[in-house]
Image (cartoon, rainbow, N blue to C red):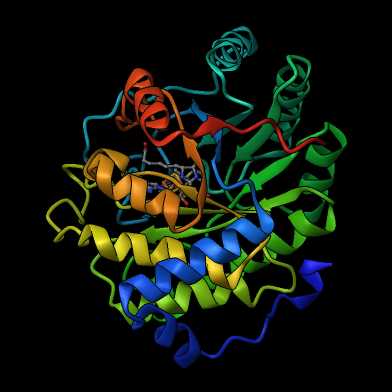
Length: 321
Ligand code: SAM
Ligand code: DTB
Ligand code: SF4
């Protein structure tokens, strides 16, 4: 089995050496790995919904939902179940196979966990895969969400351990690793990646991907987010990442975690269609579709379908539960 050959002992210099390879060599290897483990011309579609927006006590410098920054966001408490079900139905009818519910919490309370478990049951009942991202979880909370049938939990490492302190001070790297451990132990599939373009170095990008690849088991889903620069956040004016560096990140993630589905995640509005096409060639096998991510814009659904058509890409079927 292919997964038996995957490694969890990458040295930083080895990952950096992948980044430093000639672009054609890197992309050729990434595409070769991709074809060995995944359908070459299929991309899975997820749709996001912010079920609780803004007012978050954490200080993540990239995030428009932190109370520490004035971003003029319309905040709201947990949405009524009927609204969530309606949004999920619309996403399913448009072609999404997974519905991801995001909440601006540091960590949910017991009662909030119970309410989200109910949302998971209802969204699953519509025939969609479910994903939630609610902040830090205890082992008990992860078990409760698993019992409700949650398919994936998204919790990102965000960046390298070395750069992390420049971005977030209200919780540490180990907190994130602990939550990932609880999610894994509960039998929920792990969706874990990070953000690039926050002013970090290539060494930090390599450090993030190394951390992900050296987890005890590779995440099933690896979102590579390009920073969405939001006015009012401390990162609003950071220099954007060169698009080909984003492509390299996708390619290196592809090579390090061959069985994971790498998601070309936030920030596609900052990428040309050509850069996105290169990301697909580099091994991205999933995107978010829908006009909005959590709080920021995403390409129009019709534009994404036109790009799929032009590239001969078909929306992938759900992986199956
Ligand atoms: N509050 C929970 C947490 O942080 O785990 C869940 C929601 S949070 C918005 C989910 C993820 O969105 C973050 O981990 C971060 O990686 C990503 N994110 C937030 N703001 C972003 C931005 N401006 N650009 C790119 N990704 C962003
Ligand atoms: C992930 O890695 N990216 C998504 C999802 N997980 C929750 C979130 C992107 C958020 C982008 C900023 C916003 O729209 O608020
Ligand atoms: Fe809060 Fe999550 Fe935003 Fe951080 S990324 S401020 S934890 S909503």
